[in-house]
Image 1 (cartoon, helix red, strand yellow):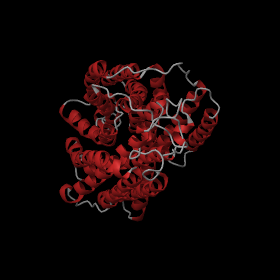
Image 2 (cartoon, helix red, strand yellow):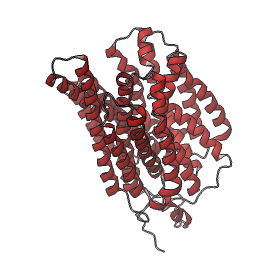
Image 3 (cartoon, helix red, strand yellow):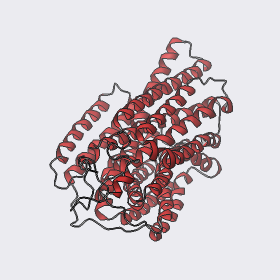
Image 4 (cartoon, helix red, strand yellow):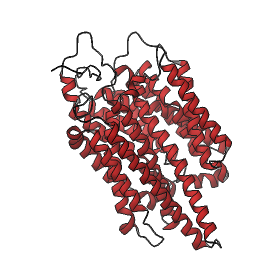
Length: 509
């Protein structure tokens, strides 16, 4: 059968790594540490603020410092893993992340804490794409690859909720500093496992050089993008500084794309993102990430301020979502994704997410957890467990091994930027809705303020439902059908065919 050479080709599968399942455990542990750290500190912030004495205005920088460093350096971290070796980069990332976490846990001032969080984000940007790249190059058998990505995708989707749960326990029963110290314990276990089970792999020969101009342009663009949305969340969308940063980010992104077209050793080969399936996967991760933060942020507010849940109770409230997410991740990657492909699965997940969001709009001040909150959280979990593993696996499928790190970094960048955009947009929309509600129901009594907060959450859920619906339409249009180009369901037959003469490495679309 004649092959369409416009499709990317997978190389013949490498022999399976004898300790690949232990490698999965190590990689999953490192990924969990990085993902949960985006939220584990949130519940600890009030305690940290009381002890270190920083203001409400300064408080958001403890979160923003991490996301700024993490989001802006992901592409660089992914490319470094391709250049200096994934095992070495993975070990460096673990040591650095653990050291930064210990530094933050010992913080004696606001500036000390923020600096440590920025350092965490820097090493997280090195660690996260390397972890996914290790997984991508370790699992080459399609069925086993599906299982591995089911685990990884579940962690990517549920890590934030696990962070809320862990943060609540550590803050309530130990001390806020343990929300940072816990990373040291996780990193030590992961480091020992990586030394034994993660393969060093072969480096590209001749070894390419780092694209310095591309690194500067990409890092600057991502920094201004994340910072612009974070600034808009606090200063408002009328702030000129927010728009200056966002416009500047757009200009740098355009310059980055133009440079990548002519660079001898591009930081991000454009063929990686031009492929329809990968492009659709990156967009799906971005949209899911934006909506997911809406769930964490506003459901947490509602549980703690509306229903008076403790930090531990708030974390436990997300357990049904985590359970349904893990279940959906395993079912989708092992059973449904190989059969139907992402074109069917991802839109279904998006619609499940939208359904759960609409369900949440019906909450009132008299709602109960069992009757009104458990079901929508479980539905959103099913949606995320259907979206994330399928999108992540598709985004890294068929990528040239020499660019596995930067392709993985693009997945993480999509999720991080999506989270930043979602947090800023939904928080601004909610704040505007609350202000309007109060102005229409004066005087601002405690009951009016409570209803205004509830109304603002509902507005955020409606917008998140709209984003999910848009994602469903977009993914249904962009993903290829099964058998039309490289997809998870098509990978086995592509890998089984012999490559053309001289085509030892996969071509890009």
